[in-house]
Length: 71
Image (cartoon, rainbow, N blue to C red; front, top):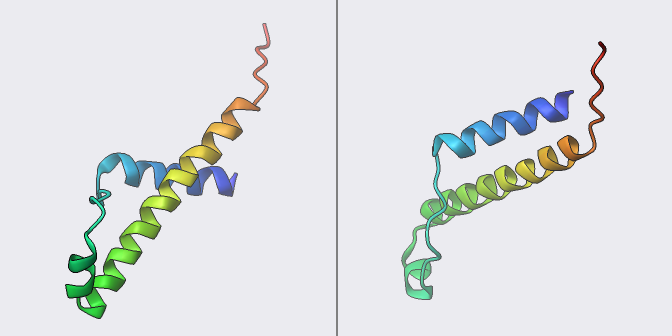
């Protein structure tokens, strides 16, 4: 249940567009970044990857749920 809740919250963050995946910067742009800007870029990239993986986990969970309806 906790895993589903975690994935749900990450999916909401992805859908809300809080942090959007930016285009890959060029080598020159990467070299011009300050250490703090580079760290923030890495954090945003990691968060986006986590959100995408959470979406995959939710899909796997929903694919394997057995639904039974009691008359």
